[in-house]
Length: 295
Ligand SMILES: [Zn+2]
Image (tube, rainbow, N blue to C red; front, side, top):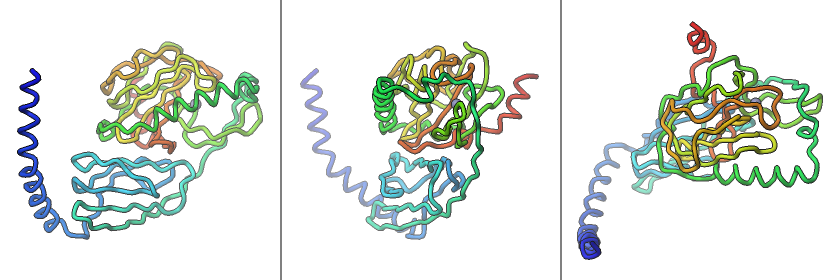
C-alpha cells in the first residue's frame, strides 16, 4: 500500500513540470483571447445589504474594499454589502497574466424601518455583567464559524425560503426593545408555531450548533461556501450536527421562541464573513410563496 503511494508521488513529481508548462501555454492563449477590457460578470444589485454573485476568468484574484475575495477554481465568487455600506464599492481584479484592473460601482442607499418590540424579557434588554461575559463568549463562537472559508459553491444555487409564513420583521430595521433603542435587526422574521420544520435554503455545511445562546437561543449556522452563510435563531430544536453536509430543502431545525424573542418565529440571517447581508435578496417575494402554500 505504502509502496503504491510512493509510486504515485514519484510519478506526480515527474509529471508536474510538464503539467505546469502546459497550463502556462493554455493561460497564455486565454489571456490574448480575453483582453484587458473583460471585467467580472456580476449578478445582483449594488445596494446596501445586497449579495452579489459573479464570475471572473479562472485563475484571477479579487480584492474588495481591501479584503481578498475567495475565487473558485472555475472563477465563481460572492460578495456582500453590509447595512450601512458607503456610496461606492471598489473591486480590483488581478488576472493570471499579472494585469490588474480596478472597478468602481455606485451603491444605492436603503431606507430602513423603525420597529418597536414590547414585552421582551427585561434581562435581555439590559444584560447583567455576568450575562455580558456570556454574550461575548457566544459571539466569539459565531464570529469564528463565519470566518471560515469553505471551497464550496452552494452560494450559486437558487435559494428557497427556509420557512414560509407571515413576515414579522425585516433586515436593517432600527429596533427599540421595551422602548429602548438597540442594534438594528439583521434577519428576516417568519412567524410560525413552535415545532414547525425549517429547511435548508441552499446546500451547505453545518458550522455551528448551539442549544441556547443568550440573545439568539437555539442557533444554527449553515455555510454555503466562500464566506456566505445562513444563521437561524430562536430555534426550538436543531436537527443536524456540526460538520454535517445538508442539501437544499432538507429539514434542519424547528421553529422556537428561545433567546430574545416574544413568540415563536424563525429569524433567518445571512452573512458574507462579518458583513451582515439581507437574506431576502436571494429569495422570491414571500407574499406569492405564502399564498401559494395556503392553497
Ligand atoms: Zn428577528
